[in-house]
Image (cartoon, rainbow, N blue to C red; front, side, top):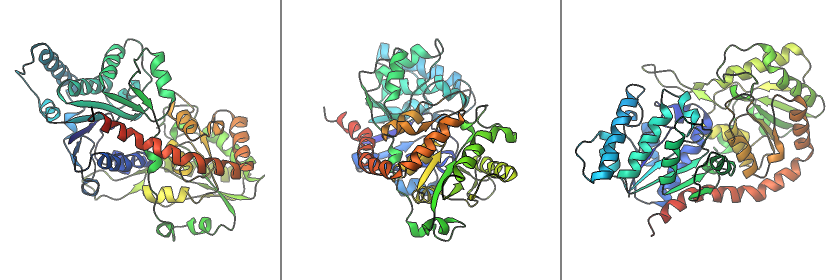
Length: 434
């Protein structure tokens, strides 16, 4: 089996692996499950992963520019689409490109685009969604089988790329979504979903580091001691009511809802609250690689300063060290409860049966994946709107009061969620059993 993995998650080196930690929660189980379903397969990808990851997971990277290069992409995409359409009419190939030659050699081409198969793709680059649609359509014409898996497609603008998106979507041999909400959203835009399956995110299957590996970090030993209840609190730029998500600097007033929730809650419960980042970064080459804090960390620092300045909260601490993906998930698993505006930090907690309140996005473009993931785990009642103080506080306090019940429910639900996550890949095998 020769398999090519493409999609809107095709990003510069390190972005999927060393940036937003949730991205890596997906990547590792994604390729491992692909190998499990197709043993001894040759897997190539336009995702730019490290040499260590490629060796560990037995994959090979091809140049990112085959998918999107941020330069002359539209002209190349139009050319590739024309070549493909002419091939459909004449069944002869008089011209080609490196990408066409690559997909011709494949048995299966998989699009993995997460929640950016739609309008959100254009936040990454000019005409990004259209170019991605062309790459999908070319693969559909020249490869043996194509699939789009573990996505959360949408939203879509009327007119802009919509008809082409419907054509491409209908021509995938199989589509799987990582939650159930996307299917209804697609149908509302008029997509044919007859070959679409609603499953769950592979990230639920990501395995944390052993507890011994997180001992010795500042403040972590205090959490591990279990002398007091501990609560993890995580937000990111998407949870503020005013965008864009990367707005910086922000006024202290943007943090008021979060500060007030923490103040009120910390004075009513006997627990320690730990502010935690769920993103990392690294110096740009040619600087030597090292894992450093990402864009969430300054947000958590400012929230700590706002809380300290107001002087009303008790027992609130900032986790200041840099943790890799495995360590981050291990730390999430040690909390008694988690409040998270990062969906995959919530996944990291819920997948370890930690009661979790999920903070929705506070500004456009909204992401239906938060609602979908929370629903998948049977925890939809604990999805809170970050612009409504009473909604956040009431759900946080209700989760605190019902931690034992929530933990029991997660113990039942999560094994089922993990199995549905695996089904994204077992369904692919059925394409070759006909």
